[in-house]
Length: 315
Image (cartoon, rainbow, N blue to C red; front, side, top):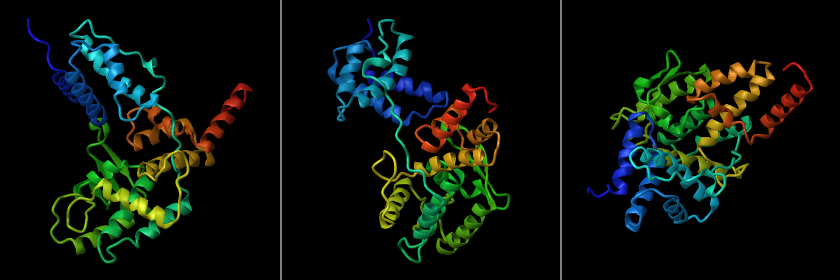
């Protein structure tokens, strides 16, 4: 009788299967490999059982029910995959440790904050280098287009058509591609950036659009450090539930403020949100609605619409 495959082998088989279907699973992959190392080391179970799931979940360095619940959630997909070949597999129930998610309120930037942030970026070091312009343009692009930071950093010069004012996002989530038209107020600073970049970096080390002073691609840690440095210099504390300012808050700001503008201008919100969802690269419109929860202004509008609906008013 053949010995059962190691847990690491089973996890890698599962990840390869999911990735062939377009899922990146960066975080889930790391979590599942952690499970495999734990299960192979413990070596007491040949099948995925609820007891094994609980033991691994509780082994986290962050001893909280929320963390344990998230670990169980990651395991459930893997368990369903294992069940195909091993009928003794037990799928851990969602309710083991309670809910796996809680809605944290992000920092939504005001217009004045965004202007102050972009102005402050001009003062980043080195004074006559490319870094201030790179940080300013990336922060401004995230706020004006709702791009993910990974999408902005992956742009090549061929992906940016400044004459037409269109970005080509080639490798978004789930390997999706999309075109992102830009307002002239966005393309003009990018044209200025290209002129400065080409003047300061004569021999780029890569084909990326956004570069560092050494000619290599700008990276997420460097842009995040710049953002948090600027916020400290401006004396800002993050509003909401996060302890620090995040690059993702700029994407969140774009989506929330775009929706508020739809209401203010009397636009058909249901139709507009569908277009917005496509623009920001969401796979489902429900992903866009997720951004609305926890935002007092939008929740107040939703409550008012529901109140009028219950009273029979026309929406």
